Length: 283
Length: 313
Image 1: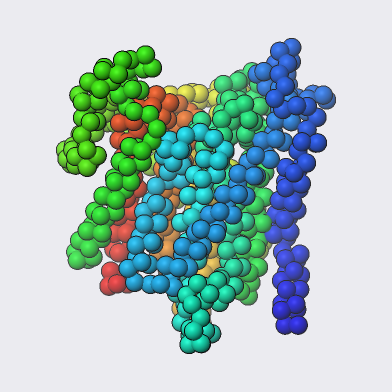
Image 2: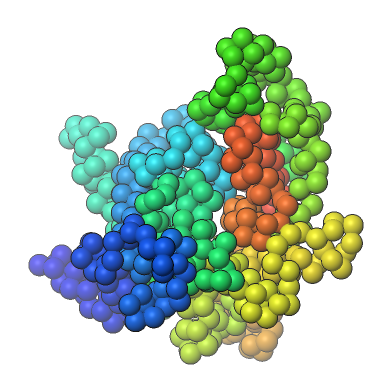
């Protein structure tokens, strides 16, 4: 009963908090569009048409066409689907691996903790874009490798979220009792520590999903992301730059889609953080 | 303060060493042999072997690693495998463009971000605050390359006020600043968004502190409370975040340099990447990492200087 009313209270706060509500609507719309992009796209995103190269936005091509006469609107939809897929998978992987590493480091303490956290700190001292490029050089191009690269960038972030609260939680009575009746470290971490920080982790995932999508676009823009002909939003912006004077709509709409997606998840994450942080909520 | 500084510098050295090692190893395990890259696909096996020997690639990895470290201590980054030129010369030409850009970005960000953040926090939950928050969240969400393209589209193509590409003549200050303006503005606006947010939350946190209530309770004017008690303490945590900003800035500078074709480090990195010039790539990565480690060190020292509590830890 206690749980339910708490959940209900949270839901009520969530609906009343405009930021998170608008963010949730935008994110949901985005996910639906991404899932159904195949049916929503009016044209084949890869179909070229030499007679309709760089035509400005009009009724039949609402976002115009690119330098090969491909429909920009259909390409943006498909690109959004790829960005979202890459973002969600890498954030999920980063969340699982990173949070685990952080909790293990925090629970174990001592040398292991120092080693893990120090190493992750050093990883974070590289700018995301530079480290991402470095990983992509080693792995080579391809969608799977982009996912791996962004996962690697997400791990230290989640590790910090998992690490700090574990330090306090492991001293609490219920952990001490669990240990006393003989629960193993693995069980304690999964059953007793994880539930306490899972809320924080989820909130941050929503925030970092925005970051992940931005990073995917940045890597594509630098030319080390998912290789063409697969349409990705970052690739479209990059190619569109060459036609900025004659056909700015290619870059403009692709970039706008990135902005929309990142903004949606940032808004959602930001709102969720306000709600779940009791210190902020009290204000 | 001296003991604190020495301690911090000693901690920075192993960090730098680990960063160098990671870069070295990653570049070594990247696919593509530098000798083969340089000679192209049609070179004979013997020629590739000979070049490998000449470049020292046939030696064990740890010998190469020590050699590289020895070179770095003398600021010698070796030669480019594509054009054979010493890399330090290219770095020396590129570095000023990147430093100018990042400096412009951080100064712009601090100049506009701190006042906006403070203002937004003091007028919390009013319309101005909402607008400020939405704009700064937008600034966090917009990829710097896209913002650069938008600015370029408006101020270089539609209204031809500023040059589309290039870095300008490094010896001609006016020309230099003229070319710096749009890229600097791009990075500066992104920075403003970050600084505004951090400042706002830092001021809000400080507003809840007991000493603010005490200051108000003893009848100080609101002006005095804000300037003497609130800002001094709130700004502390903003200084503490200079290191974080520097990482974001460096990453952003790569993207902005690509958009505006500024001949800085970021462009050098991407150029080397396209040509598979691994030695240059390694050098640029090392410079980037050193840059960040150094700024972090400086930020820590400043923090220690302004907040005595940090020094004692």
